[in-house]
Image (tube, rainbow, N blue to C red):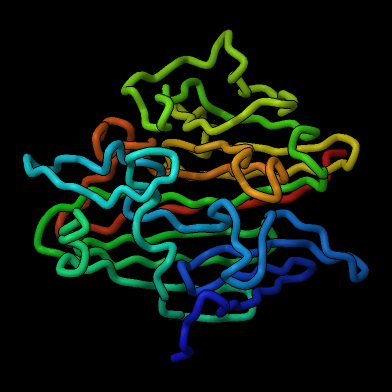
Length: 316
């Protein structure tokens, strides 16, 4: 078994595609295309643990987004999470993005990382539940896929949410120049500390309606979109594109994902608005306090799984 540090990285290849993942947090660090020796970034990424900015490529389990004031109740019991959010007194993004994961399988084009969250370890941090987690990245003819499996290996039902934090680029110096399409009819209203108020606002008639392509411009996105619109196969597709470069990136989410956070990275020191985070999430922000927003109640021995895919294409 290889020792895992924040600098441990594995390279995947398939045809003209390359991806770099790390068992440190099971993070996606790079995804790019290679043509005549030239590299075209699809994911705005990094190499080396100290170079990560703005949560690039993080895996967010067992809660993506924020839990307001770090407090929630489950099955009638109150719990207090560590408040580790720089924006306010909230818990944010779960526990696993700074953990060493084990590499279960490593092939030329595919890698699976796994880790266990143990109730004895995390009870003092407000999460007395045991989960086995696995994340698989794979390159194939359709692009890059990311699949997760969560298994309840504890002695009680557990609240579970899963999210991912990739940033995407279509080659612009600022994301303002690109266009986005977000297939969502609503978004969560946030307070000044970026915690939901409990209200879902409709996008229709607002500047946040991106169900049809709109230029990002100077919009400051840090929004959790819900009520996703799906095709006949129950897939929801968000797209980033740039006409002058003839490039488009589709993020295709299966039915396990009920929300997507869109973030323009305005607060990232040294690289504000360099890329657009399109974050597939199985539940809305603060779903621990609003289970109707997609929180998964995972029963004893139950398995929860899902997949999203990144597909690059030329527009013409």
